[in-house]
Each structure stands twice: as structure tokens, then as C-alpha cells.
Length: 522
Image (cartoon, rainbow, N blue to C red; front, side, top):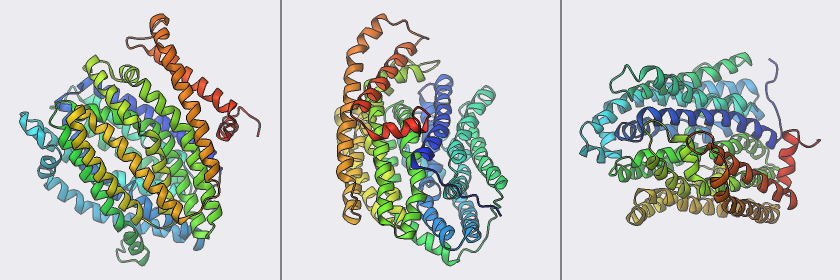
């Protein structure tokens, strides 16, 4: 069979993932706009968003989190040492184990949905029917756990073969399914919000089918193999086990935050709407870089090449800084404008947009740290170390819960967003300290210089936007009801000033991106 392994530069592969992710996140914004237009930010949306967290309680364990951390390094090792057929068989073993275990887990979670809903959204009891609606929606969406987990397995397999575009595009199917179901079915269902839950299942099927068809065309036949005591499978499970502790702590964290927010009507929705916007740059930058870097780091770790390992990680960090710092400036300074343009339609009021914007600005203070953490954690996973990130996750979760309880006293539910940002700083600081104790990276001093340059460029862009915003608001004709013209002009100003400063300061990452998009000869 013809080799399907493909090698590309980190920046080029990341740009492909970012483009596919951008399309997916754009659909995600449309999905949130449709949700806001049809259902606003009231009790029904609170119920849906809380219910969606029920199947997601174990999503990190069976899908993007622990599964990727355990599967990709072993799959990459099999691919390098034993060949493609052995790697494909290992993927089949994981497929079989996931199918068998998740069938039982989903059945149990459907049975105990009322108890789970009571834990994560007990505050809904004060509003008639709200908790019951959460239980109904949670049970309908429970099979999504199976679909997203198997999709994550396909994604890890494709990424290990150097194929990143289609896996990055696959999440668009979830957004598309939810949009179509909400628009087509909400007038005919009771409660109407049930249409979104059905859309989740439709989108999950789309994610799986899109990637499986792509693998099939590449000549890859993924069949479940039921051998639950296979040594390779046991090795992956042992690798995953330490992560379950950290993931359990993270889910407790989510449950605590949801429980705290559920006491305020609309708070769960405001926090979630803002978090979805925050995930746009996180998906474009952090997740894209981490997705590309993990199989490369795993390959270097398997070969014992610490020098190349360090270089790959350093390039990822610099790329993350180059992209996340201006994004933070934009989302802090222009949070209200962004939320107004994206969400303020139909049932979503100007006050809803203002509340969401304030939360978004506080969340965004942690954006660079969230980005760098997403890029750094795979460096541990590639070395088959899941214990250290799990331990750090537990510490940062504890910090987050403490800060949530404290800051809510002064800032209300928006204090939960600031707590998340501060906990992100703690998380990234610990990850960096422990990784640098293990691996000496020669480029650290250069990275520090790059950080200073990028910070200066981002702050300059922010200062310019702060000064020109009043002029644009007063004199620029708006496009649409929510100042789309002003927002586009401000975003263009940030981008131009930032890129100009990067050019003046001779930031290398600017030249790399210019080559990728064809603005500079290679």
C-alpha cells in the first residue's frame, strides 16, 4: 500500500489546521448567533448548555484529552518502529475498546442523568421545569460521547500520518448539524430547544463520517478489534490513568463553576457565549499548533532526539505568542463591540451583549497563557508523561475554585471568568518550570527576546486602537445595526499596526507566515 505519511513544516501544517479551524469556528459563531436569535440567553439556553456538559463530563477522558495523550505517542511509536500495519492494528484495538466501554458508560449516564444534573445545576430547582428540561436534553445528547470519542480516534490517526486539514474541519459538522436542526426543527418541537440537542447528535455523526470516508479513500480500513487485554492496549490505559485524576478534578471544577453560576438567571449562558468567542483564537492558534506538534514531538521523543524536540516546542511557543498576544488585545479592548456584532439579534438584547462582553474581556486576559499551556502539555505527552500535567491540572483547578468563590463576592458571576484567567497563569507557570527542569532548551533566551518584541508590538497596537476608537465611533458610518463597520475598522487597525511593529522589530515569525501565505518568496 502506498505510503500516506506526509511531512510539512510546522508553520505550514499549522496554517492548514488554522484555516480549517477558522471555517469551523466561523460556523460555531453562526451557531451561537442562531441560538441567541432563536432562544436568547434565558432559562432554556441555560438548560441546554448545562445539559450539554453532561456528556462532556467524560469527553476529555474518552476523546480529545486523555485518549489523544495516550494514543498518539504509542501510535507514532508503532508507526516508526513496527510499521504501518502494526500501527493500524493498534488503532483497531482502541476502536474496539472504546466501543465496548462507552456503550456501558452511556447507558449508566442516561440512567443517572437526574442525579448528575442535580450536581452541576442544582440552582435550577428554583425555576419551575428548568431542571427537568436539563435532564431531558442531557439524555437525548448522551450518545454524542460515543460519536465524539470515535471521531477523536480518527483524528489522532490522521494527524499521526501528517494529515491535519480534514480532522481540523470535522468539528464544523457539529456546528452545521446544530444550525440546521435549530432552524428546521425548533418551530415543531416542544420544547423548541430540543432541536439543538438533536442537532448535536446529527453533527456528531457528521464528524465521524467525514473523517472515516477520508481514511477510507487513503486506503485505511479501521475495524474494531475486541481484545481488551492486549499488552499495547493495557500500556495505553496505564498511560491514561494518571490523567483521569487531573481530568476528574477539571470536571469537578466545571461542575462547581456551573453550580455557582446557576444561581443567577442567564449567567450560565453569558459565561458560555463568552467562552465560545474565546475559543475562536484558542482553536485557531493553540489547538492548531498543539495538534500539529504532538505527533512530531512524539516522533522525536521515540528517536531520542532531544535537540529537535526542543526546537519543535520552541517554534510552537513563539508561534503561539505571535498569534495570541494581538488576539488578547483585540478581545480585551473590543469585547463589547464583538459581542454586539456577533450576538445582538432577535431575543439577545443589548444588555445581554454588554454582560457577555464584560465576561469575555476578563476571560481574554488569560488567552496567551491558555495558548502556551495548550502547546506545552503535548511536550509532556510526547514523552509518555501524563502524570505531571495531571498534577498541575489538579493544582490549577484548586486555585480556580478558590478564586471563583472569592471573586464572585466582588464581581458577581463575571468573577468566574477572571478566576479562570488567573488560574491559567498559574497553570502555564508550573508547566514551564517543570518542563525546563527536565529538558534544556538552548533557544530560551531568544524566546524571551521574541516575547519582549511581541509584547511591545501588541501594546502599541492596543494603544493606537484605544486612541482612534472614539474618532471612528463618531465619524465612521456603521454597517448594520450593531456597528459592524466600526468593529472591522478597529480590527484592521490592530492588524496593520501590529504587523508594522513586528516588521520594524524584525520578528522572525512574521517572515515565516509571509512565506506560507505567498507574500514573500521562499
